[in-house]
Image (cartoon, rainbow, N blue to C red):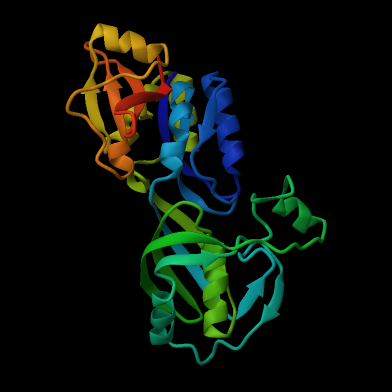
Length: 297
């Protein structure tokens, strides 16, 4: 059972809970998700099964799009609606133009500090476990990429934005930082992930529908092939001898396929002459060879 499911995660369920449910439904031991969603968040959660779990890192690295509802005038300890209010501010004078101006400062490569209630680890322990024990530690800021920020709806003190961003971006932190920039405080009221890489929410399947599909035996119609998320990589077809080398993990030389720089050019998809997907090869420029990175056969 090798492939990827585009799940529309329901509210109130953890990403791990979705994985556990799919394990139970499918009977497949190797199941993993690509990009955690908070329990209260909904939307696209790619779940990989079988050999699909081998390419999770390429899914995690993809661009994501979120629709976030933010409320001005309060700060919570979790940066979202699930936490308790720890501070209130006056948002009465905040206007739409002020929010639009503030959003511009969060575009591009920005420094962001993960919230205490997050899975980021500190000395081997998840921050959320420390937060629940009432312990707050200094967190290192990290660089994240925000490609696009658009104000969709304005209904003071609540507004909705669409965020297109790279991996590791916390929308909760973005909401909190935006509140600080405006001087009144803010928290994330609701969050929907509408896209993760090639997977869009309009094509996502709900858990109840998926459960019914497994029960009646038509779950395969929701399964995407493993290599669908690697379409930006060049495809090469290997002869039998080269295939045998790749299967054994040995580097190979491929004519007219030298890497040209950039992530997409550093990797290629390898196929057998009969069309079977063999795995991913990584180009080693100083040696002019392709090293098997993920062999899926």
